[in-house]
Image (cartoon, rainbow, N blue to C red):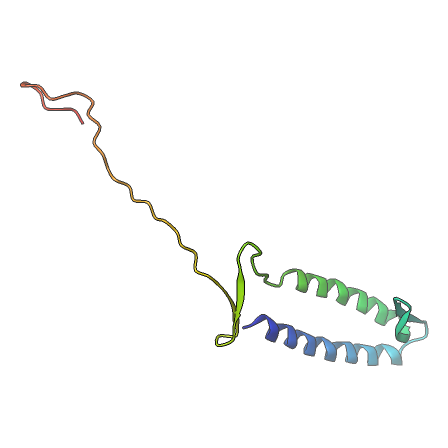
Length: 116
């Protein structure tokens, strides 16, 4: 499965989970707070239980993102539209072959064969 499709599936599932949890928490809430990032209010009057839930989800999302596959920066990558995937040039390697050699420990004489 492609990374983009996995991210889309996770986003869809998490959106539904966030909505259901928010609905449940708002009905049981008495203590509330605003979620403000860089001076912009993202959520107004969020219940404490939902804020705790969001904190756990942020940790889980961080774990998810940190485990996404990444392209090796040592390689030059290009996107292949036909396969809808990233490709790099094939790596050429050299194989070595062991060549057995005989080591003569003692030369042959007229009375004894060589010791190899």
